[in-house]
Image 1 (cartoon, rainbow, N blue to C red):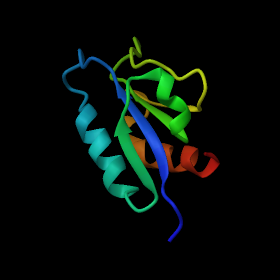
Image 2: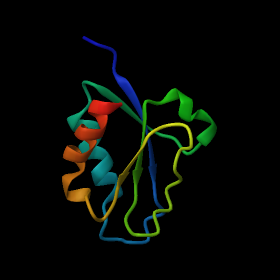
Image 3: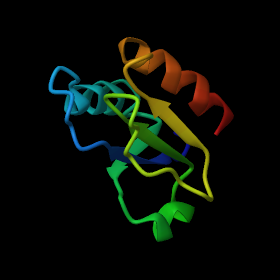
Length: 94
């Protein structure tokens, strides 16, 4: 089996209570567990350790902080229902 890639996960503060940030995380980490390691990481100085940074935001404020050194994948209110599909597309390029 090939080595798994590493994804940093950052979430927003959760002010939009109908958006299930934990649910999105659980879906991704469950569906891609054989090929990706998912780890919550809010320390931007450690972004180099990851192949991709996943930002899970519930609204337009998008307060999960973007990486300046790694590709950012934004999952928010516009695409959260397709989170696994969106991640698969970005993961193929990471």
